[in-house]
Image (cartoon, rainbow, N blue to C red; front, side, top):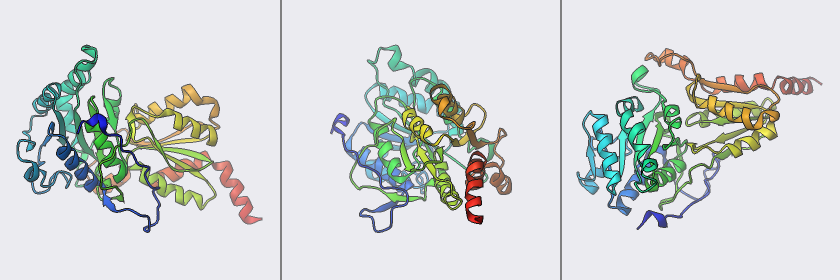
Length: 358
């Protein structure tokens, strides 16, 4: 069935839906597996390759046994040569295929930076839109296993900077499936970033194939005191922080952008106009990261909405350590978000505490 006929969209249930909600729950990793499985089944031009996609682990389970179902010509292992494999994927996309190039770590996409930035991102523009590049490049970021400085880097901001690339960062199982389907159906190169700590998170996911549109963020929690725009796993951390802050009388709104390029700035601006306060919770380094771009957009188009300067909660500007103890100090989480919001809302806290002692 042609991808142009794919018009199935659903509204995702809220993060905190009760267990009695009608629908099944599967994990983030299972949702990715199901999306790729359905895309392979639907379209013979789709194929997947990558280091370890056919091993017993199957890329953390996201490609498990698909090589048995579809054969080694459509799901196959790739050598440790990122520039050549991504180049092959680009060439096959130009020839009418829909490759999904899967990488264990985004760090090694730097080996293919020439192919991604100078070729995949440019060919359609250089040929006036006559040469589509329907290519998906998946990579998994995040902490754990002592992944350290060369196996865990959140490099998505580099790709957001490049015109011609779309950048996707799903935080839920529902979005993981729907956005992967949309990415495979798209005629442009897509950098699809997953987060290792999300793989076991479960959520409501329809069995049938469906799409989630690019460039449409979702308000995960409505609030009136402060806006948190959170990226990837920081959505989960922000929602947990919002629960703690609610107990202190601070009403937090949490926005998940879902895609960084294209980016839905209108939903963010409406929220900041309502709350007057902004925290960006990112999994990238603080300097020149995606959080800096968000603050720049608000400064340009919504500066008058801000009651106080916005705050970034992001990685410190040092390489990622390998020690578990140092990892815990390096990666921001609930406590850092709570502290950032409390500093923004000191007046609100004083009012709340005053009411408690009256």
